[in-house]
Each structure stands twice: as C-alpha cells, then as structure tokens.
Image (cartoon, rainbow, N blue to C red; front, side, top):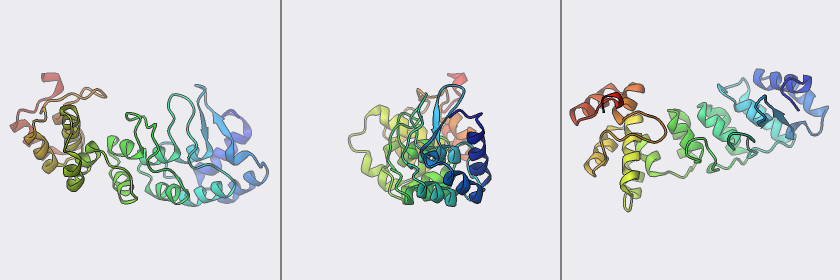
Length: 236
C-alpha cells in the first residue's frame, strides 16, 4: 500500500504515536496488515517495524509496539526494499533507540544481519558510524560480532588486541580513524604505534582522524593528534 492511503496513514500514526489500542484495532481488522509494506514516493517499501524504527525513532511505547506487531505476525528480520536492505534493528541502532533494540533482539532479530548502509555491515556498524554510543555498547553487551574498527571506535581493548594479528595496513588505518571518531585515545595510540596513517582519509567521507575527533567533541584527542601531525582534510 502507498504511504498516502488511509490505512497506511492510520497505522503509521498509531505506531509513531504509541497508540497501542488503536494499533491493535487496526491489526484485528486486517489479518495481513502486520506483514504489509508501505511504499514511499521513491518506490522503496518498508514494514511496520521500519515505521517504528524510522528516524528519529524513540516512539512512545516502543517496546510494547514491537510485542503487538510480533503477536500479529510481523517479521522482525524483514528488510527494507529499495536503495538499501536494512532491517528494523539496523534502523533502531542508527537512532540510538535502545529500548526498541532490546525488544527486537528479545523477539528474535538477527543481531549480525548484514546489509547496513555502512559498508554493508551490521547494526553495530551503523551505531558506531553514526556515533550512537548507547546502542553500540548495548549491541556488544547482547553479543554482536565485533570487528577491528568496532573495537577501536568503542575502546574495547581486549577485542582490539585479539583482532590485531593479521590486520592489514588499511584495516589498521580504518581502525585508527574509528578510534579518533569515537574519542578512544588509548586505542588511537596503540594503532598509531603500529604505523597507522595520522591523516588517513576514509572512502566514506573526506574527514581526517583529526576532523572526526573535532566533529564529535573530542577536543583533547584532537590536540593530541595535532601534536602528532594531524591536520584538517582541507589542509592536506
């Protein structure tokens, strides 16, 4: 159904407004609604779980809404169809919606589902790339698979050391950038000592580690980077 159809508008309003009673009435009136897709103007389609987790997420009664939708037959692992293939969990992680993230995991969401807009990775890749620190750490607590960049960005020193053997120069550079993006000086120092490029530019945005640290408010780390030759990308 299209987003401007009356049923789509009604169910979207119920979900976004946390109206559990209204949502139950709509689901009871249409046995297929819980698995329905809403098509947007670009041709992409989302599920009702995606409606719940769409930015900025954090809808009232979010966890209870997950339970209502699951009870009616919604698939917590259904993917967006269109420009990407993200799951509701990936959207919740991108919005730092920890309450709904937990509810989705409790309902069987795949914590390591791929297809994220960040390098085709997992919900954890989305959370740390978008600086959604609560969601990122919660995913780790819940058992998410951790990459070298995840470990560096979140300051997970044990994981960092576990994953460093065999890492390529590009992986060390990416992890160093992540450590600066996440304000993790100890990890940054460790990676710089291994030869990370202090002014490495990632393929996803034209920001140096110095720029990334400043953007996220890690001024002390930015000062340390400057002392080691860190520069703005515009000065390279």
